[in-house]
Length: 271
Image 1 (cartoon, one colour):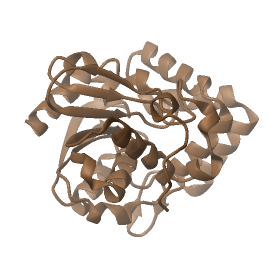
Image 2 (cartoon, helix red, strand yellow; image 1 turned 60 degrees about the vertical axis):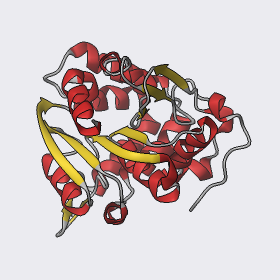
Image 3 (cartoon, helix red, strand yellow; image 1 turned 90 degrees about the horizontal axis):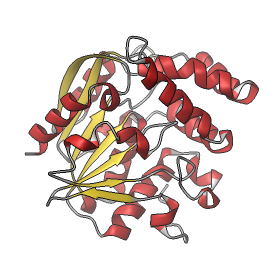
């Protein structure tokens, strides 16, 4: 489904910020339960060379939640339209889209709908589908386990956040990063977090991968409880013009735990 741009001012809706300088534009898109603040570990390595567009999906961070439409944001296409709206509002071209986790697929969807805005894609720990769908695909989770996780959001939202944060960040990483991610989860109103969670964890966008016509760099963590190396290999095999690099690291948030390495990979890829 293709959504019409919102009647609300896009810059306010998505809390758009532009930092850095340079002729090349990087658009950084956060994952589920996060906001643009999670890129603060990576941007210092890039802002001297690139124009960087930061934003929050509607319902996340400091976005304008009055613009939230449940019917739009119960599918990832709704979040892809946020990306397109921002590109249109800022009159962007030749964008290198850098998406964390589910935002990798969101960026791909945006490029299918509006290819005129994009040039390259960098996907940090992406997954086209988190479900196990044997015998051909194993995304890492049984549907029943994900349903239980979503139900926990209703029963004990704080408990849900405290359970999920170390799983996502990786237990071997800095406890302060785990706490930061947990705080990010807790600061998102469940009214907006739950539709995003369902759209993230129960969707299957494997069919989109062969349609992507832009060069892509897939960066996967060697040890990631949410998106395994095998998922990265699957994406690489199914996505034309893609390359895969496995980073010797733990956790699902490489842009926070290993920002210097991610910055180096991005620069090499787009130069």
